[in-house]
Image (cartoon, rainbow, N blue to C red; front, side, top):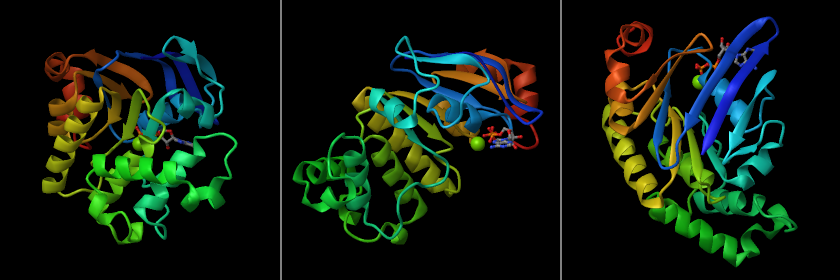
Amino acid sequence: MLEVREVTKSFGGFRALSSVSLQVEPGRFHALVGPNGAGKTTLFNVVVGRLKPDRGTVYFRGQPISGLPTPRIVRLGIGIAFQRAQAFLSMTPLENVALAVLSLRRGTGGFRALLSDRVAVERARALLSWVGLTGAADRPAGELPLGDLKRLDIAMALAGDPALLLLDEPLAGLSRAERRQMVTFIEKLLRRLGLTLLFTEHDTDAVLRLADRITVLHQGEVLAEGEPEEVKRDARVVEAFLGGGDA
Ligand SMILES: Nc1ncnc2c1ncn2[C@@H]1O[C@H](COP(=O)(O)OP(=O)(O)O)[C@@H](O)[C@H]1O
Ligand SMILES: [Mg+2]
């Protein structure tokens, strides 16, 4: 589904990613873990075209996508929800998702067409019901608790009907109870939709529960990769991440 091949990315003299390679198989839930500053978000930014790699290539379903603009990458079938909520807080969830649906179409009137486009609104309602936000569809998004805002972000990321979803720290900022709910929600929704998932997360329990495969990133390099059980046994991994101080 996704192949990152020998991607290097520097900021000034600082190497945030150093010849990183990884493959995400179709239908798998793949976790990218590592301490703060390891390069996880940078890698996501490279995959979706927000950053251009200095070297290396990203392939989606066998096609090179590095260098394409983000909207084209999204239209090819990659949805993304970043760590910080993307929704407009003064707009309702329905408006936010309808806007996400419309923004992926070509040749429409964009924002002005928003509330008159029945198809987009119907699609938005369906997406909101998938993420359990039907009851909150029509009040300002700014009034939603963080867990609901994150679900709204996921609904927006699903607007383009992606085959691959990237979630950057979907549990960040949530309470313990909310984190458990979110893990169950992600698991159920994505398995039902048959999506492939690449996600980052610091919550070890959540990673071990969700992931079929784990890649460990440390200081911009791949430190280990494997099935959750193998990765957990790897002493370097335990030191760098799972049992480590800042994890
Ligand atoms: N736009 C940028 N300019 C300069 N340095 C950056 C930029 N983005 C990320 N970095 C640096 O690259 C490293 C990796 O960051 P990031 O990918 O956000 O890590 P992670 O998501 O794993 O916590 C960090 O040291 C960070 O400060
Ligand atoms: Mg990050």
